[in-house]
Amino acid sequence: MRVLVTGATGNVGREVVRALKARGIAARSGVRRPLDDSPEAVRFDFFERSTWDPAVRGVTGLFLIRPPAIARVTDTLNPFVDAARGAGVQHVVFLSVLGADTNRIVPHHRVEKHLAAGGADHTILRPGFFAQNFEDAYRADIVEADRVYVPAGGGAVSFVDLFDVGELAAEIFSKPAVHRACGYVLTGPEAVTFQDACARLSGVVGRTIRYEPASVSGYARHLRRRGLSWGQLAVQTILHVRLRSGRAASVDPTLERLLGRPPRKLDTYFARRAERFSPCSG
Image 1 (cartoon, rainbow, N blue to C red):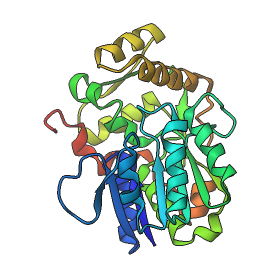
Image 2: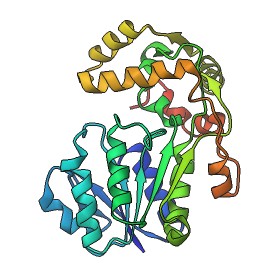
Image 3: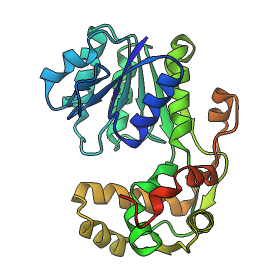
Image 4: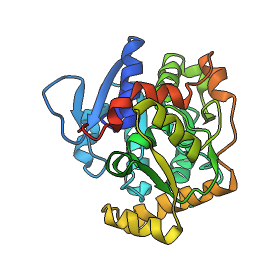
């Protein structure tokens, strides 16, 4: 099998490519701007259909990620899925979000429905909050102000490490017939509050990282100063406010069952990526 990984340079895509290669599965990285002429990288853009055919030529698997900037999946991801299937892709693994199977507001819902309408040649992953949010959405506040600033109140979260998501994706592509038409909820092994998470991170980086609960309006202003669009701002705010209800605290056993081992804890992730939280890191 050869797998095309869209968004291969992002947090999720990198882990999927790593896990595929570790299993001896050929991985082709679909990126907007390939850095070299490596046969493992191909130019790919959801908005440029001329890049679609070369990207899927000769591949039998597709790991599909929706870029945050794309909301209209009916003009981008869904027709690309059709093109990939038409070119011979036999199995699609789609990175969705928790609750997308019933939440019609999120764009992932429409992709899930489109995949299901086309047959059973797919698997849907519905992870909760990523541990990698700390080095992505929260990193600037951590390195610049030694804080995590979100409107989550005291809500707890079962953070899932993308290392495990990548491992599961590789497992699925190694045995696609076992996972046809399946949808999996993916969480970490424990629920922790942001206050607890910051205490754990403090112990790893050797300085105090505090959790500062944000108000909705304060967080919105903060994200605008960070340069987020109004659409991105709304999504980020809603996602974090919903954490106050505890809906992200549930621990699901699916990931442990599929991997045959417990998912990685937040502490393990912090220890592995500690250098990313240094004020001196790039």
